[in-house]
Length: 373
Length: 43
Image 1 (cartoon, rainbow over the protein chains, first blue to last red):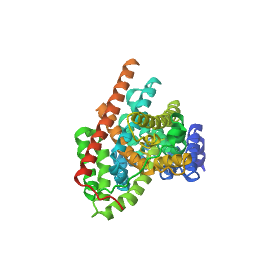
Image 2 (image 1 turned 90 degrees about the horizontal axis):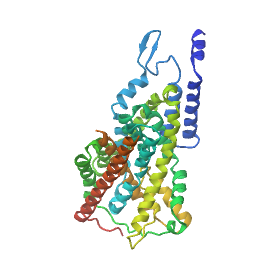
Image 3 (image 1 turned 180 degrees about the horizontal axis):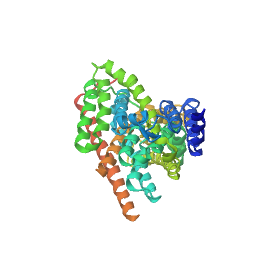
Image 4 (image 1 turned 90 degrees about the vertical axis):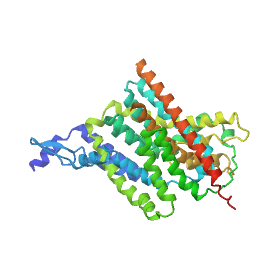
């Protein structure tokens, strides 16, 4: 009885607010199906870490230091960058680079749609964040949870919690954010532009050599990005080599599932009331939204710029698909194109831009780290 | 503040320039791979 009274009386209102936030995250994941694989573990984790005097986090109880289980996991999986990198193997195994290899031109949109990252770095600096923190906030615009965690953990570990939440929440909100951003900078006529698609098959040799050569390029040109790119491409090689289907399936399913469980739960170490309930958190969440919007706008404006010089026009919405949120972004673009013209099929181009966004985001993350190293 | 902003703009130039440069390189690699190992068009 004494223990119950002691626990109840030692819970602060800030911890109760964090538990409510945990409940909201779980609601979004379960009821709204917003990135449930991450938001549900993070939601319950937020409740776990805000109870005082438990063995969840490292705490000093009655003068005795007890190492918490989530801190053990955090030090093993996040501090060492292990969990995000393992997830990259799974993502690589899931990605079919075929639509990109048959239309390599789409790669340029994967670069243009990273604009939001660097735009938000400037905005965050203007609001008083230091350059390391600003770069970590900007990486939300990579639209890629593991990259955001990987970069922010190195540059500003104190902001890891809100950055992870913003990254995963906005990825789930792509179907709402992107149409709004695209409509801001395109006309109906531009959205109706049709793009004829000619299916060209990609040879097996190309598919196998692609991840190997990309790994070598990343190692030579942007070495700091090599862990991210290398693990992504390793996963893709498992998929494409044709003799490791068993490993490829494991990477796509069991590996990603296990690491997602651990990652979501472990990130919640940063969701304690003391580290999360700050004005900074609200600013980070707002800046994350700006990053996503500016990514889409950057991609669209780049496509419009290219159209000035091209005979065959590109539907500028394809530019917005150059973010890393795959396959959601390409689906959104196809839906928007068909909403304007039922006979408009831009999906394969959008998929090409979308997978190049996967590469673009990890390269951008690596370059951010490279800038500070 | 202005020193931090200058660094921010440097980061923007370095980052956007770097991403475009690397992806353009990958674009050239894709074209080369497609030329060397051309796949047959789908029917």
